[in-house]
Each structure stands twice: as structure tokens, then as C-alpha cells.
Length: 181
Image (tube, rainbow, N blue to C red; front, side):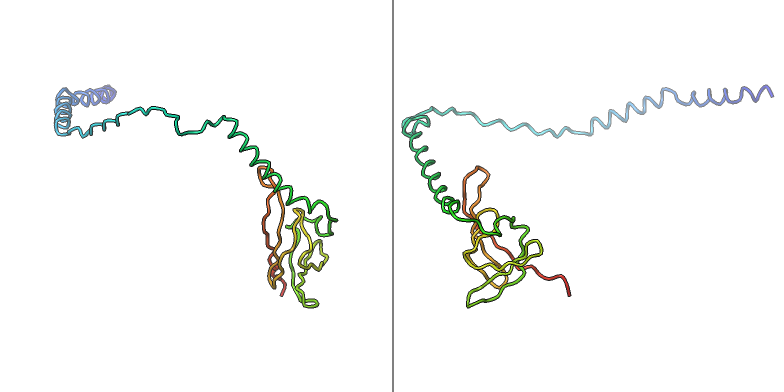
């Protein structure tokens, strides 16, 4: 029984005895061989281009802060504002029509027909049908009907862009396909 107690300790000492200096020497030798076989493949860095400074010559340039240039810019802006005001002025002077109080995304085209030889579009807004002819207005951006086809209605709108300028744009309402069968 006493010998069984010491058996694990004797086995552990035997195993540790097997890890001698010889395995360290083999490892060191293998590492040295590997180091000698590997060749460094570092490519040299490309030399940067030489900077050649340029002389500043203002002979042929216009001073950006000159009064003449500023006056030209202000004149161009005033002309553009006058053109934009000319777009909007007639729209502000007329009486608004019933369909101008609705945004275009709430208006849907449900049909078209010829009435007295003129094309008429049928528009649905809040479950009510409206007849619209060329020249009528609709939408909240001063939209005027320019053309009525069998499947679409074309509008000319006057709206503000991101910079606040009034621009003219064209919009189309497509015929709404029926989902009921």
C-alpha cells in the first residue's frame, strides 16, 4: 500500500526526466535551419517624385474681389430674380380653383373621355370625381394642365427648389389601374 502512494510521484519524475536538454538543442537547430532557408523579399520603396514649385503669376487673371466682377454677379442675380418673379406673378393674381387645395399625391387619374371634341380627364380626390380640361389648375404648386391623353395627364408646375428659387417643372399623372375584377 505504501508503494502505491509513491507511484504517481515516481511516474511524474520519470516523465520530467525525458524532457532533457537534447530536445531544446534539436529545437534550436531546427529554428536556425528555418531562418537560413527564408530569404527576405522586401521590395525597396519607390523614390517620391521631386516637387518643383511653380511661380505665381497674376498677369492674366481677374481679381475675384474686384468691384467690376462683384457688379456683374449682382446684375446677373437680379436678372434671375426678375425672371423668377415673372414666372410667379401671373399665378398669384388669379383666383384659385378647387383642386389646387389638394396635394398631387392625393389626386389620382381614373379615366379620360372626349366631351365636345375636347379631351377631359376624370380625377378622383377624396372619393369625389372631378372633370379637368386643358388649362385647368390642380395641385399646390400652381400646376396647370397642359395635355390630356388616354392614359396620362401632363402638368406644368412652378415650385421652389432647394435654394428657394422658383423653377418650372413638368409633372405627369398616370391612369390608375383598377384592382377590382
